[in-house]
Length: 223
Ligand code: AMP
Image (cartoon, rainbow, N blue to C red; front, side, top):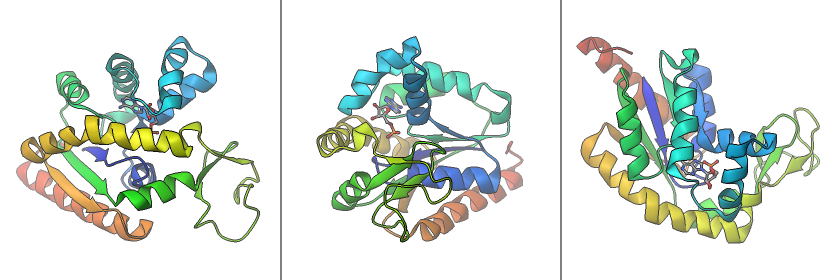
């Protein structure tokens, strides 16, 4: 099974992707994480991507498809995978099609209103040591600058600054919204209400995935 997670920045794709990975064993592939890793490692690809990422713009399609294709080709993706934040425009969707896949595919589009997205993104913090994501408005009492798991420092992503958030949302509406229409028309598309608690959203996500797995098993398609 290939699960494509869509939705604007801050809609919870990464969190739901992690939960899907844990429950179903499909590795989560986040192009944002792969790019941040490349930036951190100072690779030539990371150097090319960094300026655009810091501005909230999309990185070039060729770079993104290259890192996504390399990751999808790895052995652990053979039984399926979850794509988080990829594809992000029509060209990437077409390039993904060209890579081919024997997996049945579902598209989960997590949506919520813009005010909530901005609130979530601006209060998001990441542990600089273990990578766990926190939301300051939800984080349980404790030190606001420290990870509750490993005591690492919590930092804000550069692109979670207000000006960059605005740009990312603008880019989403221009580049990614047409892709929603394409998937609605062409593919196995499901819209998920992302306004609710993480666990409640995940119940919806599981119910879609489970019913698709049953359907695919009945029709004899590969899982
Ligand atoms: P994310 O972690 O998904 O919010 O992505 C962070 C940033 O990485 C984005 O604002 C883009 O600059 C870049 N990025 C991630 N995925 C893609 C993609 N599929 N296409 C182009 N740029 C991407």
